[in-house]
Image (cartoon, rainbow, N blue to C red):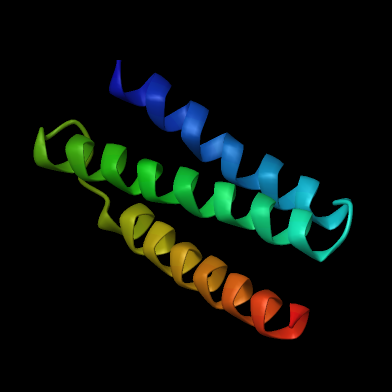
Length: 84
């Protein structure tokens, strides 16, 4: 079911971000944020499917997901830059 997939990937974003804060160094921090980014991208896909199928019509959730994706990309880039 689409909603179950969204719940799984959506909750994984926060879990990986939380895990990143307690990583074993900068590389682990970056790796966890990259996993969160992948899960965010997957969540975006499920939200798009829910909207396109007519099961959900609030595009605010999709916009929020896109903004979170941008924040994660920026955070990863900053962490990589500071790691060098």
